[in-house]
Amino acid sequence: MSLPALLTQHIARRPQRIALLQHVAEQGSITRAAKAAGISYKAAWDAIDELNNLAAQPLVERSTGGRGGGGARLSAEGERVLRLYQRLQALQTQLLEAAEETSDLDLLGRLMLRTSARNQLQGRITALRREGRHDRISLALGGGLEIEALITPDSTEGLELSLGATVVALLKAGWVRLLAPDEQPDVSSNCLTASVEEVLATEENMCEVRLALGNGQTLCAFAEADWLTQAKVTSGSVLRAQFHPSYVLLGVPV
Image (tube, rainbow, N blue to C red; front, side, top):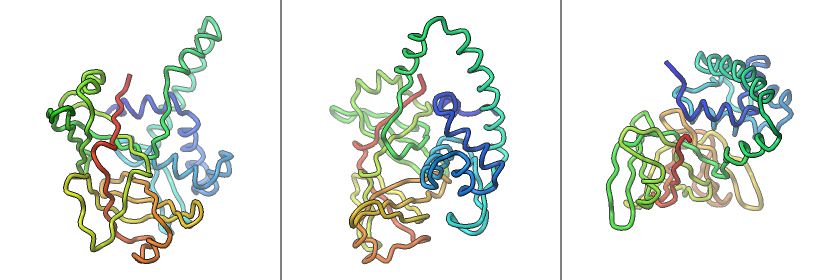
């Protein structure tokens, strides 16, 4: 089975993140892999979460002990991706040698766009319908999870969206709202149930909350520290994450 096109393109465009898989395989620990890669523990987990979200199956498996302890190893799929990365490295060397001018590489760099959206979830279009000035796009994320996006008809046409197409849903962490256990979700918004993996302090009275979805993908959100304390949120807590379909941006392979 071939790798999804979105993950394959990510490998080509973000090699430093894929190289982290090599360190995981060698070190057997996220902490040691991050040190070997010269990045922070948080940056390492961000990279792994993004890769796992884009892959059909998780690439890194965690051992007993939690994120702060225990170990980590590549899954069979992760080992396959690593082999692909190593082959792409060889091809990249050939391409760089074949570039006629430095401007050729500058042009390619401009065409390969990164995004500031923290959450990147791969999904498949299951429904597409016109609603006034917008198109409502239904996405299956896998594991029975579904979300919707609202985009303009021009965007639908420009992205050449169709039923069955694979896309990446982009969502900023600040657009995700966590609901208290007794709070009712907004019926017009997407609402996903997830378990808390980790709570990280980011700035005064604000925390980043890492959430594990039931399909193996992850979601990041921000919440006030006081709210988390009042709601008694800790690692393992089950919460609902809510975000409006208009906040969901869509991306496709080029």
